[in-house]
Image (cartoon, rainbow, N blue to C red; front, side):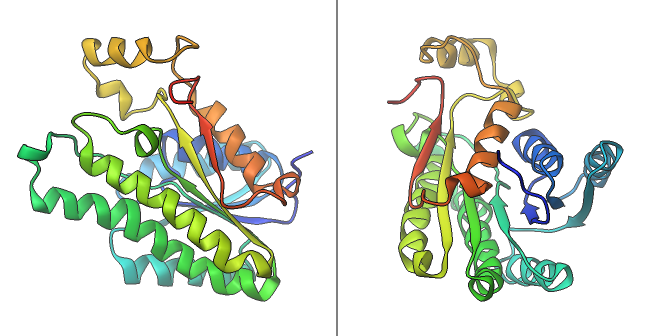
Length: 248
């Protein structure tokens, strides 16, 4: 099951956290993986080396998904170079927290540019080769915050909720071409981003999770693998919540 042999997969933000775990797992299942990174070339190279050491095929490419034109053209170029693009995991994202009264316009612009416009730009670059192949998987990594909201994260919540709307709309637009589009909504995950939380914030989040623990990046990656697989061919326009019961 979940065999991706011969598939080409692109994972944005693949140098760490959920993106890295997804890249490693997709490669383990046979996909040739291209990861993108914004700044940390060393971490991206380490991810590629880990995939290659396990017998997989991977490459890394620097990409600022906050630039719509650059993101769209980079994804299209990857598909042209590889001959096709089977899977797009739009994972790259940033978070700038704060109450609405303290929200700066430039912070809102930055979050929307990366989390929403960047994801849509990558999808735009992927759609044409997927349409030609009459097959494809697009997976937007959203968040439980986009479903339930969270005080102090209004801009982040807006961006992640936007990905859910995008997934549903694109699913309707391209289902006839054999392309599925879904959103994944992780809850509290142990990543570099959540490691910066204060102890009180961590306890507050854990108290809201019925399973009583955060997810690992590998657990989120497993859900990405499922949505990327042939076994998920009849699933489109959906939000797969992987949150330990945090939001039901």
